Image 1 (spheres, rainbow, N blue to C red):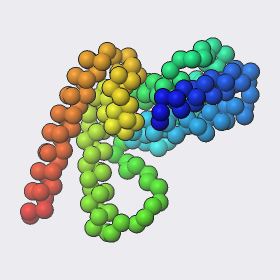
Image 2: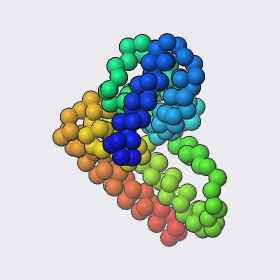
Image 3: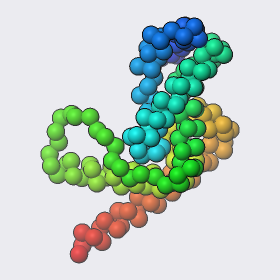
Length: 195
C-alpha cells in the first residue's frame, strides 16, 4: 500500500473514530470490519487457538471503543494501535497459561492440490507451527510481527516497545532458534522414514 493510500486510510479512520467517540455504532462496525481480521490474525498466530484469538480481537475492539473519546487524530493509525494492543493481549494470555496450542490454522477453501502436495504441505506447516510455538514468547512475537504480519523491523520494534537494535537482535535469535528447531524436526522425520 502506498504512503498516500495509507495516509488517506488513516484520515478516514480518524474521522470514523470521531464518530465512535460520539458513540456511533455504524462507524464502530465499519472499523471492526476494516481491521478485525488484523487483531484476530495476531491473536491466532500468537496463541494458536481460534477461540482465544476471537477473545483477543474482541478485547482489542472494546479497548478501541473505550479509547475513542481520547483518540488523537494524525497518529500512526488504528492498524498500528490495534496491532500493539492485540500483541500485548496475546502476550498477557500466554503468560497466564504458559503453553501454546498445536491446533492447525483453519484454512479457507481454495483450489485443491494433489494428495501428495497437500500431505507434504500439511506436514511442513505443522512442523513450522510447532517450531514457532516452541519459541519463547518475545521471539515468537518478533516472528509473528515480521513474517506473518509483514511489518518492517522498525514498526515491529515499536509494537514491542523495543529499540530497533534490540529488536533485530531478538529476531536474529528467533531465526537461529527456528532454524535449529526445523533442522532437528527434519532429522527426526528422516529417521522415522528410514525405519
